[in-house]
Length: 114
Image 1: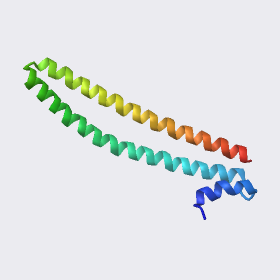
Image 2: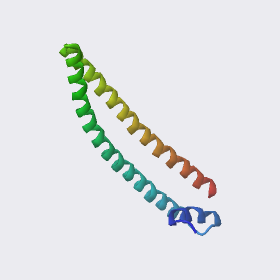
Image 3: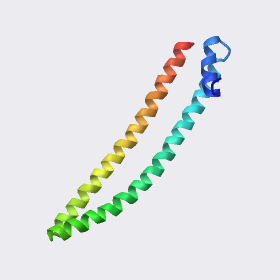
Image 4: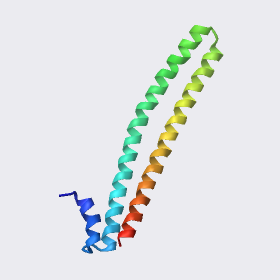
């Protein structure tokens, strides 16, 4: 009916699975989730890095060309890059907090079942 992860975790309600096996299964699940999130972030931030470099150069060129001021183009490009890096760091931290939150929540529910 369900997948093996949910079966392993919910069967503990009926007393057929030990606390140790449930803990081991939770560790397996969270390790897989953590590795998947890391892989996703690496792929996403590789693409974001290319985007920031290409569009940063475009912003620099257009602002410098439009204003005739290289300093203004440089500062605008740096502001664009800092905004992009800040956004990526926020996304990374948000992913980490989310994984940790759900891990703690699931662990608490498992503890309540036992």
